[in-house]
Image (cartoon, rainbow, N blue to C red; front, top):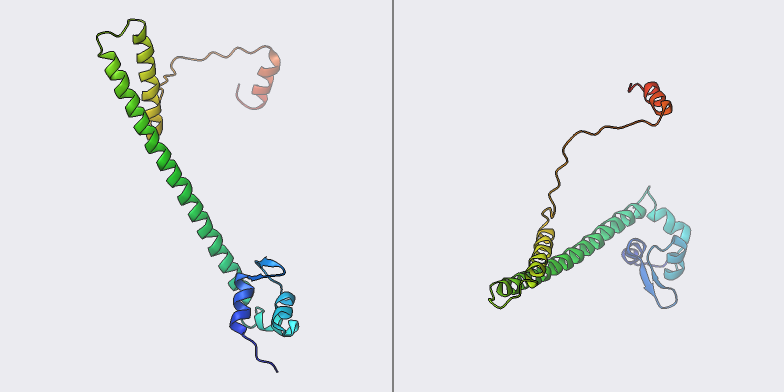
Length: 164
């Protein structure tokens, strides 16, 4: 019987392999591995099966961990981009506020420019709060609501549902 590198075959089954002909094979079959390494496919299936070494279980664990790490890296990249954008936004907003403040304190500012400057200041302040995750609007809902029905059909439905 020929000697095979079972550790290599197992690693290729679990992690996949790169081949000049096929490219990257992420989850090779027993048949593909047997042809690649010159061993018997039935023996390989028995050796790797659940009753002996259970390679499929190790493959699932490997791919689960790989997927988790990929997701973690993607989340890290996205959050880094968000932090960079938020930082840039805050810096830009602060520059805008400083510019508006200097314009408002200028004695030569015209009266028709003041509403524009204060409106721009309000917009910048909303942007600042938005970046920090604070509410930009405070809305109060007060009073009573009186619902008028347009006929007996709705009253009947409410009565049937036990609301009337």
